[in-house]
Image (cartoon, rainbow, N blue to C red; front, side, top):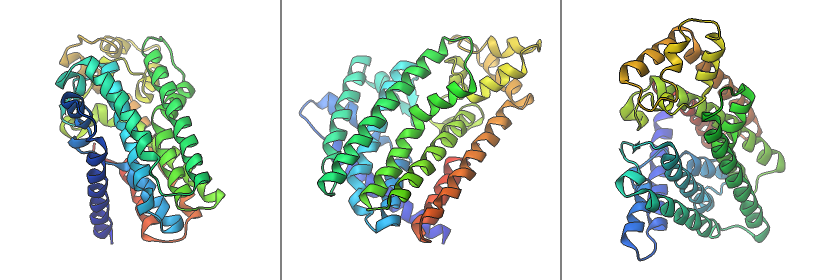
Length: 330
């Protein structure tokens, strides 16, 4: 059964990919078209559109109808990645040069703006009644604004000497989790789910999204650079106040080894040796394991909310999606 689910997921991803490439092939300016296509054509997990389709199928057997909605969120996700990489000066994304490297910064910003415009055009083609479409438009608009707030918080946090765990989790929820929550909520709306199903699926995906980001932070320090798609340790050089770093700063408050972390943290010219030493310290004091367990707790809470769905292959695939989000290879 698991293999059947994996095969079905691959088929859904292919369906999303075909639709995405059709949607972003737009306009007459060749350079802009290539910049818009740069991330979508590099592939990806497509978790948000797949989630939207699975939820719509689980609550009302309307998975196909959720494809345009899901694709609109994937396009929005890609637009945020384009701008994120400009902000963070990350040179690599999904194993290829970032848009601002492959082209230039102005083109990257313009391409992100164009993707955002296309996303709403795609969203408007979702085959639902007027009230449901208005509801989708509202939730997507609210979500994009929250993502913008989260991005600004992330930028601000890099220059702050201290960031609380609560502030970090608020940033993660807005920057990452709300887009997952929108996918599941919208899928339930498209699928004609009950209000309880809509609310529970939104919360399921919010918890999954927070766990996903915390796990992503772990991968950024302990993962395989080829699989992660960006240099290991770049978050340290960029001064990202992740849960791992926040926990470490607390543990090292009066520890003479603290400088090993702070020498590399936020230091764009830190040597590979300095970054490796900082990562080893994070591992030795237990901060990486702390974040890992934190993510696993969010995953368990997300799975519990799937009880609002009747037993089905889609329900099981949503459960497996949690295991993937929080459990990807280190």
